[in-house]
Image 1 (cartoon, rainbow, N blue to C red):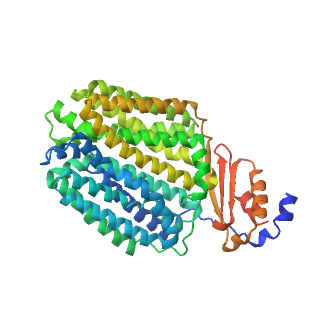
Image 2 (image 1 turned 90 degrees about the vertical axis):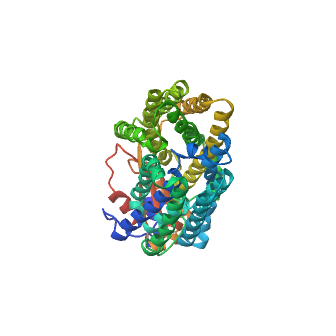
Image 3 (image 1 turned 30 degrees about the horizontal axis):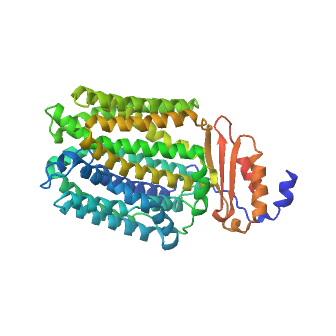
Length: 479
């Protein structure tokens, strides 16, 4: 302890009392909910057409091929993958809200282009423009600006939950809205709501007092190389790519298969999706709780991938039979929900504490690429080789993922804690920060530590089994 005291005697003058309250302030709560709603609305605009678009596209005058239908479904993934990291980095220079206004405006334009399109090419262009409004990383950065470190994980979890709700809601609401206003009407409604979201950003979301880079929420070019060389993260990036490629490929085929195997119209498909989603959610929750409480994350994760592989095999053999489709969808959504909930948690445990934002940026880009590839290949395979070939392709991806998951190291059972230093912390030298890091790592229960003076933040990964006391960190930081 003496070595810390000697080297950090000057550091004690630049480190603050840690600000710690149990609850979010009203401003933090308002910022989190309003930004989560904007994030969810954007995702809803992407997802609403999934359960109905393939059948709608077959009625267009130009009779598009399945490949073109798949491209229309997945086009937004390509432009989103290309632009979401640049959008986030640009917001560090030009401001969060201006970049969100720009992104939402582009998204609204894309929605209107798709609504007015008279052929599949016009819809593909509209969907690509929608994806170009890639504000996800900017919204995440703004959440980081508007919430204190100790509440950021909670805020990000709220946004993550909003995405899941948007996807589930879209599968039920899409067919219902299609009956009321058709696919063009859904695109138009999405555009109007997006313009409303701009007003929410302007008048409801608080303005950040100070915007700066956050290692846990934003990507940094300097950290990309290390993230891309991390074998454990690469396994997870492949996983989210495969998961969303299979998701998009599935929606090229399943709406047609339900129509062909039942008397249900496309507007009644929600009768299938609603009970399947409810059942899958009820079964997913205990699995996630077991994984986290019993530190069985890898077991549950690998089991869910195996279940997803089983779902693809069931689809391949039963895609022409109604009850086979229902059974396959049930197995699929149980696995999908567990994996979708598990992956971000595992990323946060595996990624270096000082590069979590960069790891999540690469992860989100991989997801978007999967959406594009899944739509394009799903469309091509269903047209060239039939419905079953789509699920054979998806099954191969899942089998490869299963092999990769078996060989991954079990994620450590850790939780992340963040502490804010006062404004003068950026005067701390690199040597002082390094000494402080070494002393913090010596604390019982600390698995990893990052001391980031320029961000005025200390990030710790702590063993979940340890009865952690914040006071010991406060004492170190006070010198």
